[in-house]
Image (cartoon, rainbow, N blue to C red; front, side):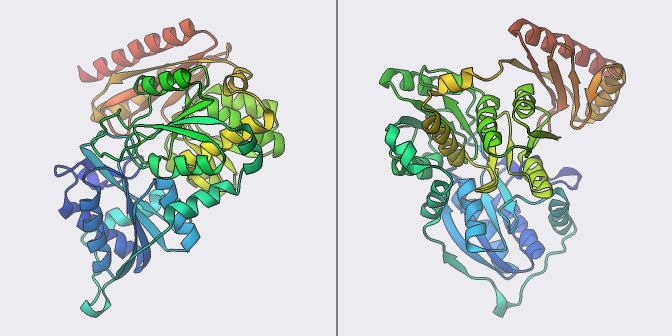
Length: 458
């Protein structure tokens, strides 16, 4: 984590607790961050991980040492804390979370005064302060203070309700099953749904940083209990959150688990019906379905590199009002330009209520694609050369090199191959109009990548 003068990865700072991320390092990150902010008021909050309170105290000590005043929000979801930054007009926030990572991990996200995580340029400023020991400590008489920040969850829930038709949703008396991953997803979403007139059944809702119910990554293989529960009790909808509740994956009333692309496309469709000619920001890993919907309803797709921060920063730069990712992240700017699981849930219910259609019907009306994923081991030191060789080999095809290499074929199938930012692997995302073609693309290009990597090793 601390090699090559890099602290920040694709989404904040991450590491195994007491190995890569110790309380000592957390204090130093706190002082570097405090020096970057040049004092001011900073919100600090954390997720449900067992190490989060310890790391929060360390970061607070570092912030106070540089003269920053801390507004301590305690345990809350990442989007609730990001909303609090805007609501209370603070200079920023530091959030202790490792999102979807296993329980032995934790992490630190730094948020700017608009509620969005720092740009890469701002992250580099903090990294330079950290590695060059350029911390500015405050005089003993000018140390920062700590005070509690109440009602963060309440304020956040009220803000979401402003963007949907509460009365229309309440008329339907929806029954929603919430899988909170034993984390902060249980703090706001069930309350929000009840205030929208829904009956709520929760699973994995007890706060437990060891994540005993399921891993915090809401992948289909981790959501079988949610799907079975929705079907068994005849619920209208199921929703699963990741560890910090900024992403949401949905299950329809028939118990079918849907990828994030589908639900994002649904939100996009009804957003563009009311807001034609708007820009839709999404990474190159997203499905062609997103472009199909934009073309059908008068939107303009802006492709970005993979990473939620890139989506948020691009939305900010272009003044775009909607963004989304294939992993269940939906960015709704009228509320805030960040991933927000509870806001996404409210938007889906709003569409269901206004159309009087079941979720399976709404998603069934969208163009259909089959998506397959794969991965190929690749040493970190060979990633760049592999990308160069791969780009050279496919240069005659219709490609994009925004992030890795994406190839579009005439039959509307495509494949994206990109080096992971966190693991020594290449990730492959293929989609096609048939499952067989998607599988074939993953197999064909996995073999091509392996041959390139093997040739570079020899």
